[in-house]
Amino acid sequence: MNTASAAAASAVVFVWLGMVLAISFLEAPLKFRAPGVTIPVGLGIGRLVFRAVNAVEAVLAAVVIAAVAVGGSAASGVIALTAAAAVLLLGQLAVVRPRLNRRSDRVLAGEELPRSRSHLWYVAFEAAKVAVLIALGVSLLAAR
Image 1: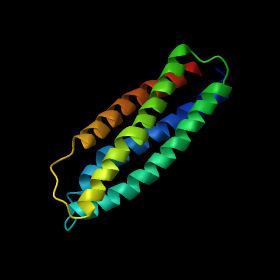
Image 2: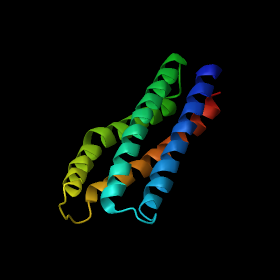
Image 3: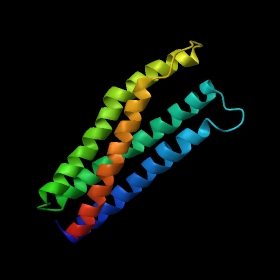
Image 4: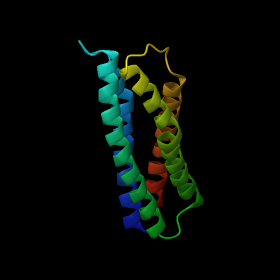
């Protein structure tokens, strides 16, 4: 893999990683501890934030995929980790987020519902994505 592509991809991967860590593991849980933030208000904020973050993640994933593809003969580990990150993001967007959105629609409409297991799936996907992004970023740095 050429140096410029590896450098660009690793930079984008670490920006992506920072976003996931900051939003999913810092902002999201803290928002519900703020004074006056009710569950419906927190859900409304969360939906807006995660919609925006997921859109940016999709762009970052596309940039990483393009950099790896353009960079020449990348190691199979880099290709596998790139694919894993993309698949995890796609799983969140296509499977988990729609379930969470349907549930939050019901809560915002006034229904009283028990805690959601879909939220735990989202957190599991985020944790796996963090691990994959760390491994991918390190692999890309080594490829330079």
